Length: 98
Image (cartoon, rainbow, N blue to C red; front, side, top):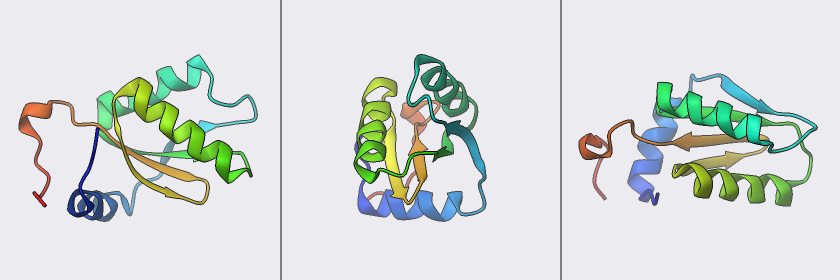
């Protein structure tokens, strides 16, 4: 899912007060973690994920893998926080157009 800069800006503002709902721990990006991210996206559409890994390249790879496998959009990767978005019903996507 590709997001325009205007859509990303809008979603970042919406997510400012959100707390992480999923934590990727020392075991890494497992099937159980992917399933939990899937459940959180289905329930909330916009979520924060905290990653307990100090390697930025690994976090970037995991973000790309999550987005590819779960068909969601990467809104932001800021430090150890990942911001993900997937509309519950893509037909009623209510983000600002570019």
